[in-house]
Length: 580
Ligand code: F6R
Image 1 (cartoon, rainbow, N blue to C red):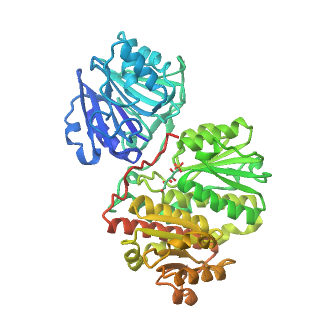
Image 2 (image 1 turned 30 degrees about the horizontal axis):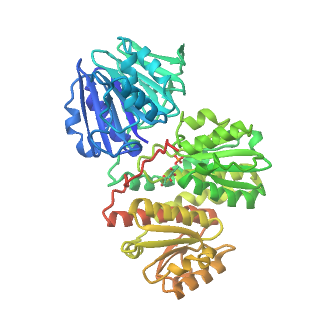
Image 3 (image 1 turned 90 degrees about the vertical axis):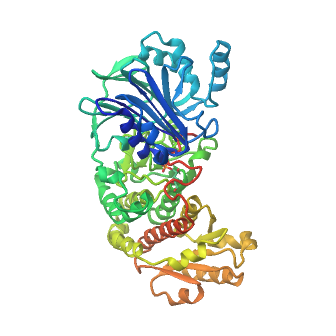
């Protein structure tokens, strides 16, 4: 939540920061702001999206600056609550991602000592604390100020007449970009792409200084060396490449993403200790949790290893008895609930395995071992290619745990199956969904998590209320809601559950619900009972599962576009949920 960018170099800082914040907008987009020092501090901040209102921010002069794009936690989205926040003198500017948990007490104390507050945010205390400690040494003042903070922060600070940015991190991501005669700091590497491939991931407890001479890192006050790492993400990966939305571009990238990820996990990727655990506990949130549920079904039936899938937000407070390994799944590697669960698993001395898309992300620093998805940057808020990449890792994992399953060969056709559904005309299904206020998605077995994921995708970007259910559960209550105005998307692929799914569909049909049926091409029995039939290729069940996931992404996308929604940045959401 919230994206921050800092720049010191020879270019217009405002230009670099505005461009960088637009790439970070997926982290939050209710307000934004930029401060540059030239040598006087100039600030522009306002409510709204930076991609729509950036012109004035770009007028700020100077080659040093910091900026922020916000996802409100404390205080409504407004000009006043937008970052940067300043101290009483207006000479110190702070941008912050995270939450200062003890800000109420600090605000009270600072007010008693005469400070004036202009916002309702938790961040403003930081500017006033730095002000109290500042005697011309910005690094020392920031170091002193952060000793008072409880909570999480990635901070960038600059001060008038001071050719320096000070960065500090605790439990919120922060990366430095090392260019030629220029330095960057940002919440993740996307703003750096196109400027430099050399990055330094800061650790919790790190404080860094960026000035005209270079950069230095201190860990809890002691100078430390941090390795420069190489990022090879291409600049095209963060552009729309001719697509109207990032989401559509990312949907279309999936054949390659699946192939690269599936083949990127080799026997060498998985150390022996993770191969035959007595039990596996999977922890994740949102779409990543749904991928975890697919793994549960698949691993239990194929490897006969008990798997429990838990929500990150629950796990921290209601930890089950743990045996075997704990595996966390997180596209961003920064989801606070997932990280909290991982730390808890470590406290229980369980071997931990992470699956993530982002090199150097926090999860990779905590987990004992990491498997990487190869999805490239996912900019659109809704998870698409990262979900399919998670499935690719998890299916390969099952394959490695149970090599005789032959899964590897069965999945060779997955990319062409994705290609096939990408080109399908789903206009009639969109016409059914578009006017609906409520939708049900139903599936059984492996397809139950896909129903959950399809419903999540639809509700988050179209704002239509959509519920995913195990098909057999509908008659235990939700049947009361079925009518000709509540369409049902039924996932009905051949397999053990096929006949019972057909019966369930007939029961729903008898309650007049319009049915969009997804099943194998040419399935006459299904075609005859549904209102709209969407075919997936006749293939292995797992290939059909992937194809169905992609089809449901398309259904959500096209419905949201038809409704005129902001597909890439749906209301009230942010991509990286770095607060619990
Ligand atoms: C939905 C979506 C979210 C994320 C969830 C976890 O489209 O994107 O539900 O899946 O916030 O995020 P990660 O995987 O980054 O931990």
